[in-house]
Image 1 (cartoon, helix red, strand yellow):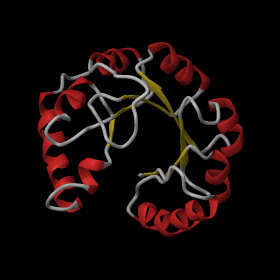
Image 2: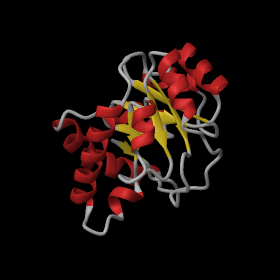
Image 3: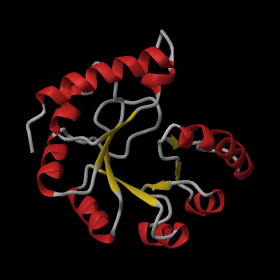
Length: 181
């Protein structure tokens, strides 16, 4: 679970993280803080996710240490993804795959990049950008290890629980069609 609070103060991020982190971790999930390796280290988060305008990977790794997850946004760049993986990133993220209201996408990624990545590399990949239960199947089938979703969960007309159930069903069906490998 990634906490992404763009524009929030450090104190607001700290309060939210202290409230949410135990809930997430008690359920066996990792608590990832977006953009802020300094706060991730301070708060004892399981990881941090950094993008192109954030702290560079090497500096983020130094701040959080060797045992904390560091993920890197690579947008639609194979080169950036390979560099991040070679540097030691725990996962790379590609996207946006679909139009999104969460933020202005830096790049538009094609589904094929997930197939290429999963065939070539062992570092997990995350698909980001406008993902819904209705459009996630090609991403899962292509090899996405994780899906980053926001609006499709929080804005679902039947609520977040219904959204998660819809994602679970769509992902299970797509995994059945995913090529072995």
